[in-house]
Image 1 (cartoon, one colour):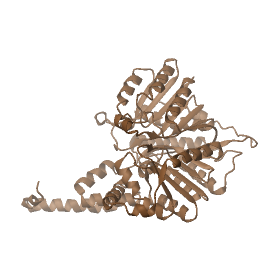
Image 2: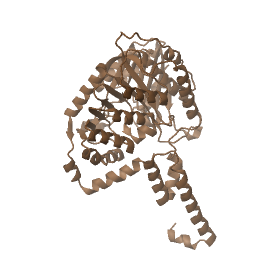
Image 3: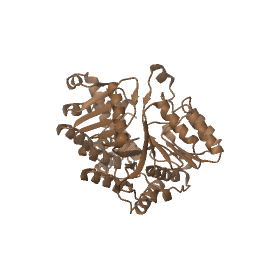
Image 4: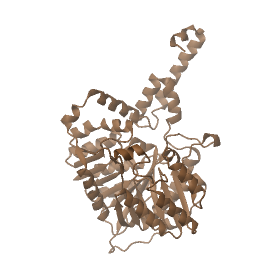
Length: 493
């Protein structure tokens, strides 16, 4: 209808429409900012006030970043259960020395997620795509009791075929194999249909995470994702990191032709920390299947390690819409503020909130050597342009912004603090990972693991170009405009 036709309507109808519009706007001003960060509030209010026909339905569909109903209750009950059962555990294992500032961060992580630090054995940091899948395949071959698989994106293709075939073989010989795959995260890849058919015809227990099926009443905010990547075998060996169970070209012939492949890392661990990974899987499995997986007993059996024994300490930090306090964002911000000499951040998607951006630039201003590694071209248009809008502030603060050579996509997620604290996992440094995605981050305190992380980052740096502030400020105006628009839309969380 032509907007001018509105004036041909009866006066009482016109009045009702105008009154309704103002009522919606007035309500939005008072309701949208509730328990929401200022950038997100401003973006939603702009959408609602200027284009209410689009902004209001979009807010009703996408405006709530938290879980409601059954999922929210399950996560809340799990958090309470772990908090009670792990109450007697020390936050830091005996024999592990940490400075008071770091201890307060570990205490905060525990308060937000109920997970204390745990001992463990660092096995390897797998940074070669094929070798990582081969290591996980070899671990599954040794399974005797159970295998737990949870990945955001999965596909039966040339690179993953052996892994999934070994999974089916394990199930056929009596191993309990449980597989979780994010529904919308995997649906778009051509090998996903083949994977789903083959697993469902096998003894493997298979469920979709956050399924969207409105015809069966299974509907929720459609852009929530379970972005976690983990494998647990017999509660003894665990893998987690950034790599999905899909070919390095993500099933695209065009990517393969262009040489566009994803660069990832997976950390392999053994010991107590694997029980924490298994417990997190158990919550996600129960949420999707309704089946209770008995992994809590293994998690809560605490045996104090003698002080004279050298140990490596890890802390698992799960996060996502079930946690109202954004544990990963708080952890990253606190760790950045804790840095004294060197800070290295590797993130394919860098769209921080104001507090995290301020912490990073402040670290550089106070003399910390700060490096940010991102892809030269991210695989998502809006994220690519949104993160570019932050480069000026970073460069002006003295941060070294390094861009990994295109067409490869640097997809690893690593944070290194002063060469003795490392974080590896699935969480990006962006608002989606902080608010909308279920993520897993593994904090590593010292040892060979942190040294290996630094070595991997050194490899990445060798493949990067470093941005120059003067050249960056001379980039064409249209690109700067798109960057700023993308930055605004990234706040609609």
